[in-house]
Amino acid sequence: YSQTQSDAQQLQVKDKFYIRGRFQGAAGADEISLPGIGVAQGSVKVYSGSTLLTEGVDYQVFYDQAKVKILNTAYLNAANELRVVFEKNALVQVQPRKLLGTRLDYAVNKDALFGFTAMHILENQAPGINRVNIGDEPANNTILGADLSFRKDSRVLTKLVDALPILSTKEISTVSFTGEVAKLIAGQAQLGRGENGVSYIDDFENARTPYTLSGLASIPAWRLAATPAPILGNATGLASNYRRGKLAWYTVDQSYYTGGSAVSANISAATLANHYSRGIPRDEIFPNKDLGATGNGFEYTFDLAYYPGERGPYNFSPNNVDPVNGRLFTDRTSTFANESRFGGVSRAITFDTDFDNANVEYLEFWMMDPFLNSPNGKSEINDSQNPVTNAKDNPGGQFILNLGNVSEDVLKDNNQYEFENGLPTPADTNPLPTLPTAWGRVSTQQFLT
Image (cartoon, rainbow, N blue to C red; front, side, top):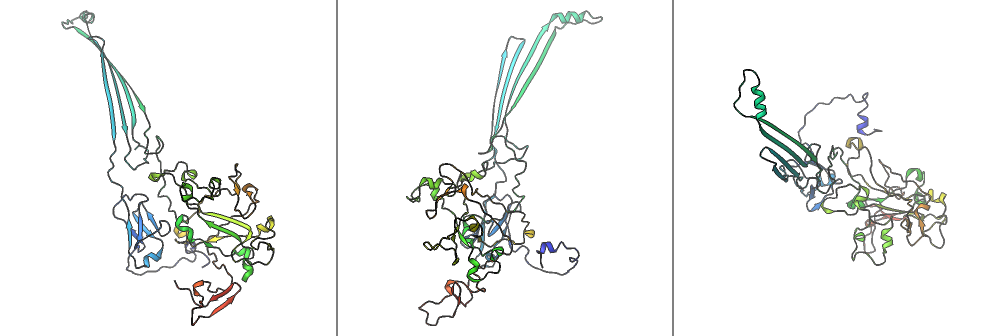
């Protein structure tokens, strides 16, 4: 097929086959149903033996269906037992209420009475709930009321009634009047640590199923990328890496941002304040994000440092090399030369690679502007090896994302086995044979996991 299975199934001219049969088996072998309802968000943890799996990489949780889907099939085939730990939200939430009121009466005389009423109700949302739907908001209302009661005997009214023909009254007539007025003052109740008076139309928590390629645990999964096809052309051997520049990828330990003895003495406060090495607080990207009980920490950023003027790994180009410092190019200040070079990293996608089948529609990421212009040296780039530059003075470049079938052949040596533990050592009495390549000798043995 030249298309994915999902796309091929849309061709109605070809998709006209009917298959009938019977089968028996365990449906959903990669899914685990959790007992009960109301699984607490973020509480699900999956263990393979004593190993804690990573959500979004090794497994995916469907909180609305109370199901866990194992994405990494290696754990399904492993001998270790899968164990799921989770919490359930309480079905009955106690909602505290406070009701205060007072009633005041004032008698002007035996005929007139004034009254005043005040009541206030305050509802606090149940613990752990910071989101409510429209119509379910906790109340914070005050009502004020006033009333008047007037009653007085009237002999004049009695005489007027007696003046009517055929009528004769003996009882004293009475004039009575009663009136009330009230005013409701609606307030706004605070939901947890959120804003006052906020209601959620829809939080869209179950509207998408995210798969993550980020996080601290995913950093080791990134590897040096092979030369892209447009740059590689027909080059083989050493020439396949002649245009590779130096690229470093890493994540900074958050202990540097929290202070303490972990910060080395040679790391200045100015370095930790630089935009390209500082910590990124969680509420800097999403100012209104609910940070939960853990408070505001720092994001685990994926840092990329690219130096097109320096030779990258496996770049043994004999051209334009600085005779004094062999790791530098002589044309490192040339914009044209730097634009012809590249640096890259790649990693495997551990979930369903058929994006149509997995309903993957977009790739979401946040990137700091690599060309900031900030005062007080906060946008300077100083690696102590190259001249200090300001980010705004860099000429620019291209950031390219390749998805699909991407080559992992970093060394173009006709698909030899390049792993160090396959090479013989001087202590081997019967060394295994090796083959020479442009980069050195390689093993003839297959790699064993």
